[in-house]
Image (cartoon, rainbow, N blue to C red; front, side, top):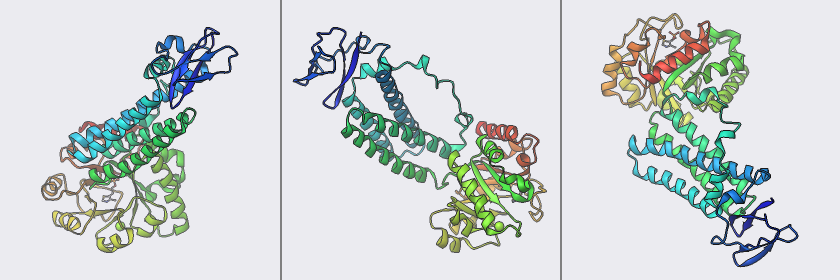
Length: 409
Ligand code: TZP
Ligand code: MG
């Protein structure tokens, strides 16, 4: 048996050339395929809808392409749907839900217009999908809403890109329309993150990569990458060693930018607004005696500014001055920062929470043993240095702390 997928206008119809005399009408025009005898006559009315006859196992190419279209059609919609649920039920943002829904429906409309849906369903063969059991570690691990939004928008964008490429085989017009939708999704991602993100994605397990503690190990991209992939939500680069030349600091920042970009999480640079800009980081973290927020804002624009605070008054002031998030600590005693001051405990976080609506990151001496107490204060994130970087198995500890954070205990 021989069969083909024919491009009839912009709609893909299935037909069988089982019989050498098969006649199909293509939108009232006759199409003569490569088969010597097959005069094919197809319209959507006449198209053979029983896909069992449309494709057989010999049609590896066509069936493969349809499987790609089907899988990515589903992926594109699923990713958008996840974000839509967050926008609808958490943000109660009608306009943005409508935009997400609109894109989902447009994708459905375009694919429906171009393909016979029964053909796509027939081509679906999840059981024999060789990619089914390939699992990337980070797939199970999302820290915070920003992580969910980014992961699902990325999934959608990639799927739409694949649709765009493969529909080119059938209809360049459909492909162009799909491309336009992909750009809408990029725009929407920014808008959704912004709408969620007075926090700009600062949440979850906030890892401070402290050069003083890590030393030259900080340059080990695989080592750092594995820790991050184990469930880190934000990375801060902290280099207090004044002997490190700026050129090296920039190299390090660029390396971390690559890793964090890949992980879809923000990169924050401690102290240095210029380095944050140089490496296209997401923002900067400043202490009480560093560059004032207003000055930093003028330089860094819409990027994230985080401020270390040690009291309710400082937290309120940081909010008033336009910080994007605050760190509060040290919650417990720490050996990482010698001038951190005495431990503040957890009560102060609850107090700050009542009047400051910025994301709060608790910091100082936090580890897997005292985390449960910190989590009761309901902060957006917890910053950790030594609990991870001094652990004998940093990846395992990261995973454990990230899971505890997600569970809330
Ligand atoms: N700011 C307040 S405490 C601290 C900083 C940078 C250090 C936190 O490190 P650790 O090892 O998690 O206590
Ligand atoms: Mg500082």
